[in-house]
Length: 178
Image (tube, rainbow, N blue to C red; front, side):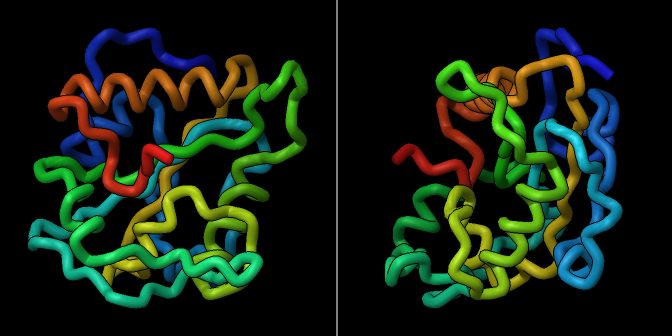
């Protein structure tokens, strides 16, 4: 499958994501038990929250401390970054070209790190760490789009740009600006 070159992408519901080629939609709690369902290829992924209620944030989330660095941020930062009227709370990639080199990471290896980080392990995947301060983090869904022909970094950037156009310049909740 190749990245869909569509001009308008909606981020409101799972069906919007399925229409552009995302698959999976597996709860974090299930992936903590068995991540073998995640494709072992490069691609992009999203973290999705289907609950319609307002999020409840934790002062201390479940994210791991890498090199002693606390991954938690203040509740004010979490509230300021929350984006209403979307199910997408994080967009990431695995296997994108960086500095002219093709990394060896795959969706499976990258998401495995992300999930281990969410279980408190000191893993080098701190992107998207805000999700681990959500009270319902175990109920979030991971979905992915395998990209054997496209650069996942470019596709991720395109999705984030499209999201920003839809939501007044805001990035998805857990896609920090730093």
